[in-house]
Image (cartoon, rainbow, N blue to C red; front, side, top):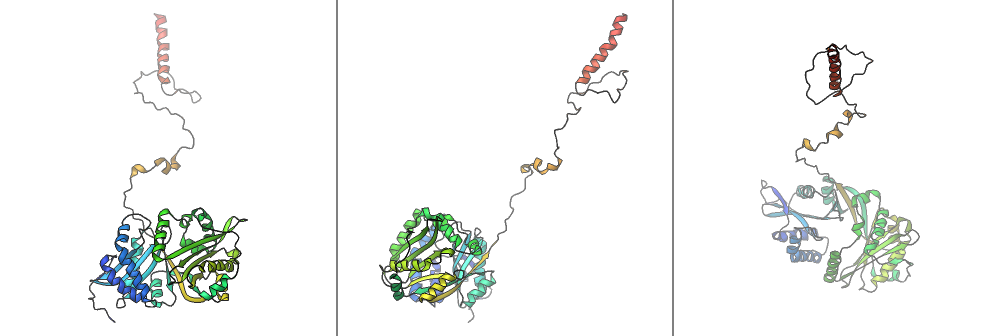
Length: 410
C-alpha cells in the first residue's frame, strides 16, 4: 500500500507533543497486534494522564527527567513513526531503545533509520546503545542491522504455571544466609552482577555501585507506583560468610489483583548454580500469599545451567529475543582559538634548556666609559684576566703607579 502524501514533503523529527498522542495510539495498536488490546489501551491511558507532568519534569535534572523521552517522525501533518529511549545506567553512558513504532504505509527502513540516527546525534552523552528485539521480527532485525547494531546476547523468557509453583513450594529451601536488600549491600550486589556476565556484556551495560542503590525519591516513587498498580516487590540476596560475598539475588514483582503474572529476576554466581532450585522454591513460597498466577523469568545464552534446570522442571518457553548493541563516537568540535599565552614554553623547549648551571660571563650592564690608552702589554694566555667591574679598579691602580714616579721626580 502506497502513501497518499506528496513525495516532495520532507520528514521532520521532533520531540513528542500532546497533540501526537492520537497518532501514537494508532501506532501502538498496530505494534501491539500480538498482544492484548487491553495492554495497549492501558499504556496510552497512563500516557495521557501523566503527559503534562512528564513533559514538565523533562526540562530540568531530576530522577524522572527521562521517564518518557520520545521523538516522532512527521511528514506534513501525518505521524509516520515514534521512538522512545531511556538511560540504562545512572551515568547515562548506555541508553536503551525501548520501542520503535512505524506506520504501515510508510517507508519503515527510511523513517526508522532517521529516528535512530536522530537519537544517536542528539543525545551526546550516550556512548553505547542497547535494544531487545524478538528473533521473529524480521523487519526490525533488518532495520537495526542496517544502522550498525550487532548481536550481544540471546534471551529466553520462561513461564512457570501455578500448579508447578505449588509443587516447588513443597520443598524446603536451604538458604540459611538469606538477607533483605538495602543500600549498604550495593557493593556486594555490584560484585555479583559483575561476576555473573561475560566481559563484553559487562562493558556494554557499564553498571557501577550506585546503580544498585535507591534514593529517597526512588523509594517514594516506587511506593506510589506499587500502590497504583496494586503490585508488591520482594527482594533478597544470599550471603556467603566465608568469601564475604553475595552469591545469589532475586527480585519478584507480585500482582495483588491476580490479573497479570508475577515477574521475577534472578542473578546467581556461576560457581553456585546449585542455588537455582533453592531460590525458585523460595519464590514459590512467597507467591503463595498472593492470587495464583504464573511466574515469568528470563535466562540468557551465557547461563546454560539455568536453562537446563527450567527445562527439567517443565517450564514453558514463551518468547525468544535478541539483545543488540552499537557504539557511538561523537566528534569533538574545536570552537576555541588557541592562545600562545597559555603555552608553557619551558616545557615545550625542554631540549634547549641548559644541562647544568651556566657560568657567569663578562657581560655588564654598567655603561662603558672611554679609558685612556696605556702602553701595558697584552697578557699571556696563562695569565688570568679579571672580568666585570674589577677592570675599572685595575685601570685605576695602573694609573696611580704611572703617576707615582712623576711625583718622586718632582
